[in-house]
Amino acid sequence: RAFGADPLLVARHGEAAVLGLHDAGVAACVKHFPGHGATREDSHLALPVVDVALDVLRARELVPFRAAIAAGVRCVMTAHIRIPALTGDLPATLSAAAARSLLRDELGFDGVLITDALEMRGASARAGVPAAAAAAIAAGADLLCLGPAQGPDVVAATVAAAAEAVRDGRIPRDRLDEALARVAALRQASNGRPAVAVSAVDSSAGMRAARAALRLRGAVPTLRRPVVVQLRPPAGIAAGPVPWGIAPWLSDHGGDVIDVDETGPAPAQLLAQAADRSLVVVVRDAHRYPWTVSVIERLVADRPDTVVVEMGLPVWQPGHAGPYIATHGAARVNAAAAAEVLARHPG
Image (cartoon, rainbow, N blue to C red):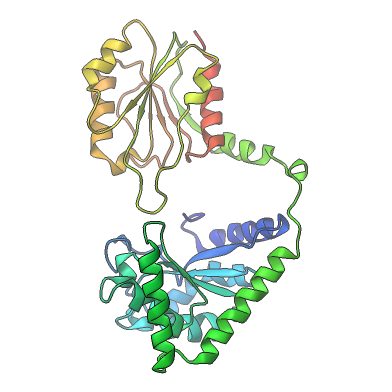
């Protein structure tokens, strides 16, 4: 979710992303303010803490946000993280010190401030979604984000909580007027700029980047009617089910796809099906799912010629000396780049 670990590098890439999106008629949003990179906990499940001094925050986390604001970014998304030196016991989403003092006054951002999903426990574990929503508006948020699992009842309760907070003075009426004006300005800016025609988009840029990102270790053997085993982890909390894999390539090469989850099929079955055929194993973020590592290790132990394709972060890498492809991404272009390498060795 970040362009890297170097604040200046991230700032340069972030600025380019903002300008590119705006050129295409899309309002860019940078996240997660004031900076999620130093956390270890998942804010979907807990309230992460970044316990650093403000001068460290300014020299590290805030550098990319400054660059994005200077580039004219129209939206900023808050982080459900606690920075004791800035937010005290509160997550940044519910902190006026983060939203007003730091983002508005110090950094000069005057666009739309949107919360991260409020059902995440980092924001709402203490008092629930409606109360977190009211507190976020009071702190300075202009738009509230609720995930798709939050139904009409939660939305109605959130609206009611915000209205009650206005009535009892916790949310000043001019705070609502301010949020309304910012959202209206965003809508006007977006509607006033036509989207770029598809024919004008350089669709080859992504493919060039995917080819440059791909790394190949070892030599891919000539593939004989490959059996492609795609190890599918459960959908992530944030993104949900996302298409990925290299199955579309197989239609031209006579291969078979076997989708495997934690329940099976077992490695022995996969090896039997791939007898006298090439074996390709595709995985995403293997380091996050021990069962995927176990399956790969069992397969390559019996079949050292197995081609392993990692479409996520290549933190874990197979210990076998056989061919290994790291795509550094799971987008369509990453799959296409991997397919190009495999297609050079058809059976």
